[in-house]
Image 1 (cartoon, rainbow, N blue to C red):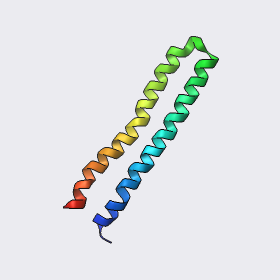
Image 2 (image 1 turned 90 degrees about the horizontal axis):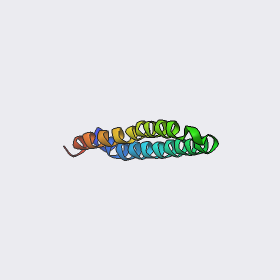
Image 3 (image 1 turned 45 degrees about the vertical axis):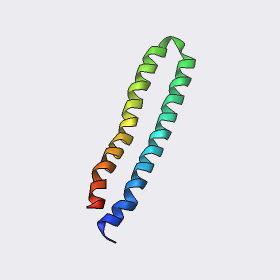
Image 4 (image 1 turned 180 degrees about the vertical axis):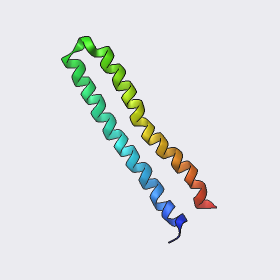
Length: 78
């Protein structure tokens, strides 16, 4: 097995793992934020701001994995 075949198998798996991890992380973060807002409605603005910033960092993982996939796809065909 050469490196092209290994990349052909590894790249989709890596993006899938990143997407699953991102989805689980976002679910936990949003769920915890909603619970916190329910307990302390007066702090909802601060909690929501923190949740949005955290969600952006969580989504960055998937975006980096996708960019890496697109960059390495050129190594498969050539």
